[in-house]
Amino acid sequence: QVPLVESGGGLVQAGGSLRLSCAASGRTFSVYAKGWFRQAPGKEREFVAAANWNGDSTYYADSVKGRFTISRDNARNTVFLQMNNLKAEDTAVYYCAARFRGWKLPQVPVEADYWGQGTQVTVSS
Image (cartoon, rainbow, N blue to C red; front, side):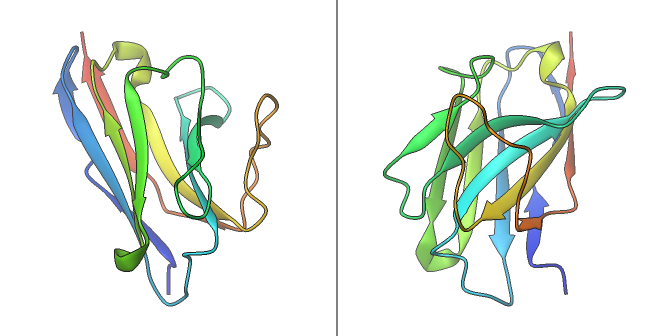
């Protein structure tokens, strides 16, 4: 059973918005930090955003700061990524992740205890 399942990806024009969701199943992930990473074709997976276990602390990559917002609903075991003012360079497969010890800036390791299967986001210019 896949513990993290993403949804909400798709094709959008530059300047548009998408909201990604990641639902956790089979375990209680409320104590885990949740994050979003992405991987564009031919590039390494990179950090996008993260929230600590209760959402009080959030972290963003410089490339998405001011445009993306991470939030979580522990009652529903779900984490969200609201993406506004999308750019062509945001095109990638987006992965949800859970890590008990969390992630901290400035050097965010591309590591997680659990990964989702990924959802494609394509931004046309």
